[in-house]
Length: 361
Length: 260
Image 1 (cartoon, rainbow over the protein chains, first blue to last red):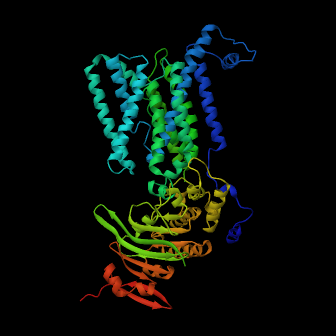
Image 2 (image 1 turned 45 degrees about the vertical axis):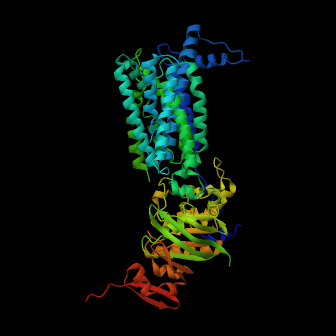
Image 3 (image 1 turned 120 degrees about the horizontal axis):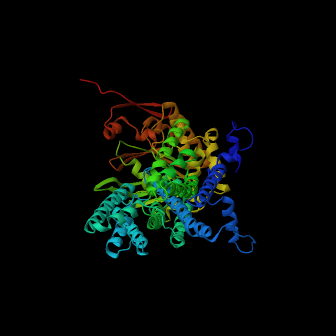
């Protein structure tokens, strides 16, 4: 069994087993991502019209744990601000950011298209149509119907695109799916604009929902998205090695024994369910699904074993920071968070792109 | 010698055209069979049928079992295909790329185990890639890329190796190196090799037997001296050549048609 080592006289010393290993998440980068997320969460909790020190946050958190004899240093109002206003908001932002970035990386892998983002197959247009219908016909501006309608619309959009792409006869081809997504999105956007024009009074409401944001986030919304984010990201994480296999193209992945169509469907379903839930509670937040995975790709590794888990962590941290900026810049007014992700994300990404090009292979 | 691969009246239709028509052939275990023929003769399609990635009629057998009898994963443990231009994600390292060859041996959602790493390491060592294991695919030369693709196929641990134009992007010296390497792999690892080949002289020297295809049909099957003749090459390739026979080898030299 070990006779082959005789064939390699050029090798010196013991076999360097570490060479033949897939790079996972490098320890240093994993630590950085965890620290980035944790730091963002603490900043998000402490900064606001009422400043709350990190020490007070820690002690207050401990006081909520059973069996510990800690007393919160905060008054009742500050306690409420911290745990009923800010905490659900930062947690929701972290969940949505992590989900969008993870789903974006999955879409880029499944479609082998660097410009793929989680909205590629009609999630955005579908959610927009669902939300507009709810606002126009059910007056659901703030009710519980809005996220449900947006979620249903998003799922319907992707399901329609998938069915259309497969019926095009070239089910194997990702190009057909993407084109089907374009067609479905165009149709749903047209329908949404039509409904919107018929109900001009709803224009402002629809627009502010579309722009996205976390104002008014509560624990109920967190509870709404947690199952989808947990299952969606867990499925994508479990497929991280498969995403590397898919980078060889459908045919070669097939000759390696992968059931490409089934795997692609599983990943698209997971990413879509997670994205639809995220969109339902936060509106359309652009750029996260593209910028976060690409930054990791440029800085760390192009293997999905690194990209997927790091996107989950860094995407969460990125959106918490973006939300913090959105509510701090024009305080007490709030900027739409999509403006922040693009305004700060784009230049940052440009810097990463330039640096990576210079030191790259 | 039992059959490692067998085609029984295999036909493949793309649209309304038969790209492979009722081809029957047998490849013995440990044999190297070269598929030759002009462009569009069906060489690649036959390899793809054996690899189970193109639907066909008739029967294609590997080790006396139909290629469509088991799962895709099972088939990937019985046959490995190296396409003419394999996809090589430029940022993957050679080691990571070779490890992907272990996919049919790894559970869908699992990651590689110790035995997978040993197999990949073995393949890397056999192809002399250990110095390059940590290099990115994007930084490799044509010959190195070819070896990486072969290492990935070897890591697959399949007894039958299908190679589509394994030397198409290499210079003359690298072509000979690659074919010698394939030949030694075949002997030492006990592999059966079926390869589509463009260069008839090299095909004749390395393959035990040649299958000449023309427009999807098998028109000749035998050792190189029997298959390669000035008249057959003129008939099927539409080429004017001179055949030189020397010590049992056959050399096919293209020559410009005489002007009248």
